[in-house]
Length: 121
Ligand SMILES: [Zn+2]
Image 1 (cartoon, rainbow, N blue to C red):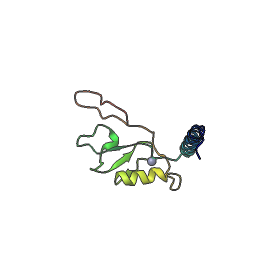
Image 2 (tube, protein in one colour):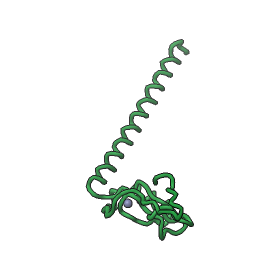
Image 3 (cartoon, protein in one colour):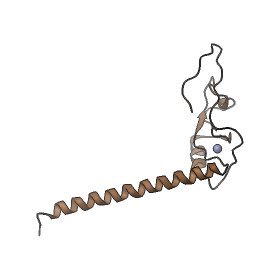
Image 4 (spheres, helix red, strand yellow):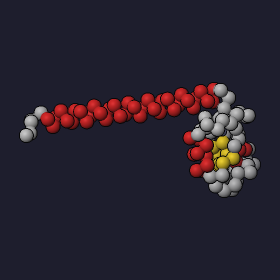
């Protein structure tokens, strides 16, 4: 049997459930961000950003990085062997805490013509 209003009710229910799913996902992301911030506030690195190899480095942090490797720019200076290694460390930063030892960010290498490299990794 078909009821006129059943389709609307189903649609409203599906819409309501989709909003609940979005709320749950948003809450999970906010909780992850709070955990990551607390980790950093405690003096540990959350490995949130990194720079990769360039034949001619533009940041001090790229010196010595080989093709495929990445160096963390958040203060721990860890060199990761690959994107996958960085992502794994990023996802498990709290399980394998690494102390920050330097300042976060990148240090542009002065070019001979004094041109400032663009961007901020
Ligand atoms: Zn790190």
